[in-house]
Amino acid sequence: MLGRLLVRFLRPAWPLLVAVVVFQFAQAIASLYLPALNADIIDEGVAVGDTGFILRTGALMLAITLVQIACSIAAVWFGAKAAMGLGRDLRGAVFARVGDFSQREVDRFGAPSLITRSTNDVQQVQMLVLMSCTMLVSTPILAIGGIIMALREDVQLSWIMVVAVPVLLLAISLIIARMGPLFRQMQDRIDTVNRVLREQLTGMRVVRAFVREPDETIRFGDANAALTDTALRVGRLFALMFPIVLLVLNVSSVAVLWFGAFLIEGGSLQVGSLTAFLSYLAQILFAVMFATFIAVLLPRAMVSADRIGEILQTEPTVVPPADPIRTMPAPGTVELQGATFAYPGAEQPVVRDVSFLARPGTTTAIIGSTGAGKTTLVNLLPRLFDVTGGAVLVGGVDVREVDPELLWSVIGLVPQRAYLFSGTVASNLRYGNPDATNEELWAALEIAQGRDFVEAMADGLESSIAQGGTNVSGGQRQRLAIARALVKRPPIYVFDDSFSALDTATDARLRDALSREVGDATVIVVAQRVSSILGADQILVLEDGAVVARGTHGELLASSPEYREIVASQLTEETA
Image 1 (cartoon, rainbow, N blue to C red):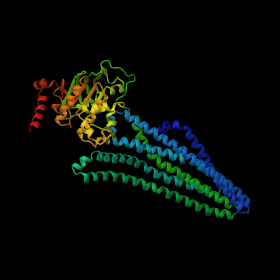
Image 2 (cartoon, rainbow, N blue to C red):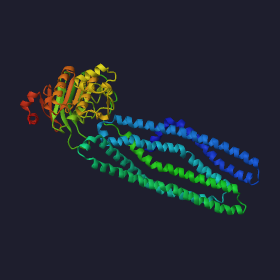
Image 3 (cartoon, rainbow, N blue to C red):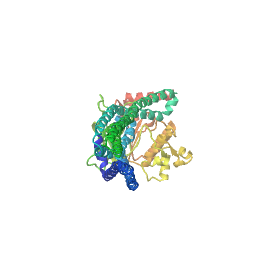
């Protein structure tokens, strides 16, 4: 998977990668040439007292060093640009794919894991590319070139390289083999920490209300300790790398000096050549070390690439049609024809054989006990899920055949959990209609019974709203969400239990205003309170995902024991 991702997302950056290779090659050649010049200074300059040769060769070494520095800087710059571009494109691809997911795929991965995969996992792949551009290109050049140049200086000492390099590779390989499973475990535990932290921040009020801070501290501590333990195990293995490299390097250097001294004494080796051989040996071993450093990053990047690949390879269950319909013959109508929906592997469907027709200018209410499938049913209208049986028609067209943008544009959905985005009151209300004027915003707030509290805010429409709307009450959040749908002015409104946080008087005023202002639209209301749906043109009573009764309030009171039971329970509660 890592290779496929790199080929796909680095292909546009091939000029940058070519530049990296060119500059890394140049700086590697310069690095290989310097020890030979140093040996010449010792043997042909210092040994014979030729100051002119020393100055000329030293000036050449200085020039080569400056070229090496310039090439190294250029290679890092181009490599960083390629790596950052990869990260940008990879995050964009993950974000785009997640944006196409239906609720089923989002629930499958979970929000914390999706966040980790689009941030931390992308960063691991990006870091591998950056380090590869910085080190990996020059590593084989230094290793192979170093071996050639070392043999050029003296063949008799080459057995030291034959021993040192395999020993170093074997030791590093054993360490890396143990790191692979730990990296997979580390990414999973990062997911866990993100999930626990996200739950605690989102549910802070609940935690404090039930005095559960100590328990939540322990829960976060356990998740954090598990991640810390894995990270420490990886860190301990990683910490062995450099001591091993330095041990092999120092032992090899001592061996070169020891046996080289005998060769110098015998006259078969010059001091400068010994110095150059020692430098080339160090370059070879450091090249191996750089390669192992990349090899350390590789297992974690491979794990991260697999996790990213799971996102990119997951096909959404809600797929846009190949040849979408872009016009609706019956605007505003909503019809379900034997609609059935079941989650994968579920024994029973959540929604079973539901049929009804809602026309413009009418209100359809859906009521039932908790878990009856009301929210799932209305989520079928904007294609948050696709039916597994039957059909859902909006505007006279099967929603699976219509252009998704057109479908979403004709539905104003107020979800069960009213969610507001960080920004201002105005920016939230304009979410459905960016061109709405302030007068239109105030008009929508007037209908939604939210004008009074918005006017009471310090900056009115420009008052700040925190992420999720946590700085306003539940009722205010619901009224702002309703106003947001009203600003959109769609032909179809879907209110999914959107009045539950409102008091009875506000609920009545809101319903009265809605009947006057959106009377020509198709309104579908999911409700728990009977008082919210008394004036509906048709009421569907849902039990275990199936419609067990339908009619007006009066008709259901006369014919449906399930509806009478709901009414009786609520009247009893109100009386009590």
